[in-house]
Length: 238
Image 1 (cartoon, rainbow, N blue to C red):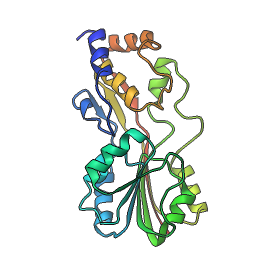
Image 2 (image 1 turned 60 degrees about the vertical axis):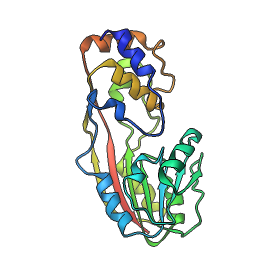
Image 3 (image 1 turned 30 degrees about the vertical axis):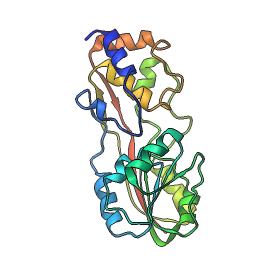
């Protein structure tokens, strides 16, 4: 396919929730050696009151069922709310800021995959003995994309496992597991990269195909683009 065809195809894909299925076969990698879904599924099975932070369209949470009756999901992007409510059939609450619209001491498990992590709010919401499991996107994530496009770095400050663990400890949680990796992420055509930049809007906030056409054409001529994801996993207890 030509550059124009690949870009037009990627630009036309509807964005709903956190569904990256369109990238299947067009991008590979980006996942760390651990399995967040497996770890979360085991914890959900032993919990009675679960809070899932920034659930997106509920895609991942739905795969962890059966969910306890009192499960609460929060989401900060309004278009995702209806999608998540239909998919999950649980209480999905709008949370546009860092605070969690959840009662203090009401959860025995807080899940957070790639969502905003507010250590003080997690400590407030968890019951004594409650567990936080979070997988975060670190500040080095796909920095090669920004460099290739000539865009500013994706994050203004350092966000890594050490920083997050320090914040959770300061909030009164006991950090029991920390893992951090930088897996390779390969985009096999420029259309895959365009879709990624549309879906993950904070990577290059001012991204448009027109604004970055010169750099995108150079990437297209290379045939594929390699970057490094930045992921870290933390488990902590109240």
